[in-house]
Amino acid sequence: MEITKLQKEVDEWIQTVGVRYFNELTNMAMLTEEVGEVARIIARRYGEQSEKESDKTKDLGEELADVLFVTLCLANQTGIDLQAAFDKKMKVKTERDADRHQNNQKLK
Image (cartoon, rainbow, N blue to C red; front, side, top):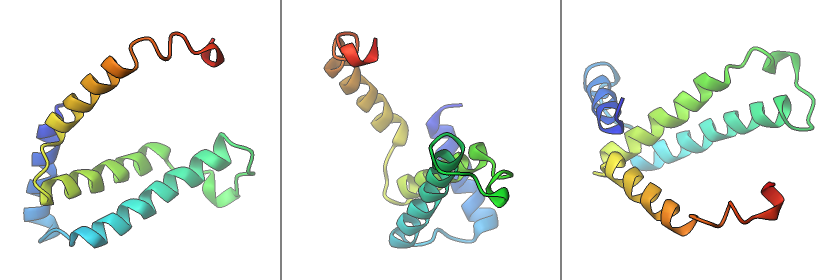
């Protein structure tokens, strides 16, 4: 599914179920909270911190989806075409990093 379709799906959900968008600052705070939840799972499940019993049932995919949802909300309410922005970023990264990672001895 293209990002454009995801943006539209989120907007339709907001208009029919969510009533309205939270303001941008609230959504930024919510995004930070959701990223923190992803970080907690990663740190405990894949890092060196021990995983609490209550954390073992947390779904990383669901938390990543929360990050995506709020990101799409922010893009919608600030008028960003996230598909165009993503495509542009991938072009920049591909051109900039064409040889960079291939020549990085740390990655071999």
